[in-house]
Image (cartoon, rainbow, N blue to C red; front, top):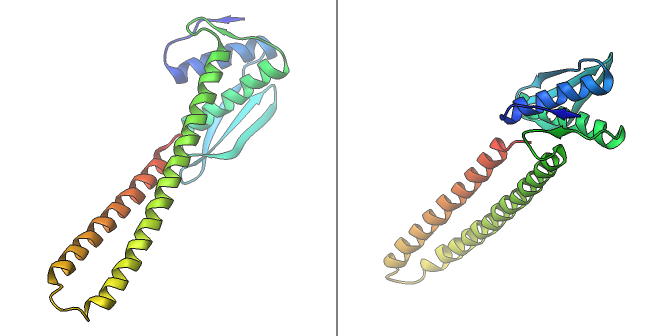
Length: 179
């Protein structure tokens, strides 16, 4: 089946989905996204009285859970039922699915990098804390260490602020990524 669709991503998915379900099931499918708790969404797809819920993964906005529900429903139509869907504004739906899967892989790899950077920075921060404690215990016994005290205080402030910045950036990434 061929589907003429508009250019925006969300609208494109909905149009493909509507036309595909109408052609395959001879009925209109409805997608409902609801907020189950603060920043947690769930989608329901109803086709011919049969309802499928998509809530196994945490989604932080309605568009994400709707896109996932559409994706899984279209995956069923193409992979299980054997239909091939051709988007006239995009080479094929298969390419769109490959692009989505590739993006998901890259987001996963980026998440790993963020986790490793945060863990490494935490180790550095802890090690610097031990170094500063050892310095403060021995500095009392050494005369004329004012210049070292100032340098160690500046180093401690720098590492502390960098640690806070890394954690804040990691938190922001986790909060803002599309699931």
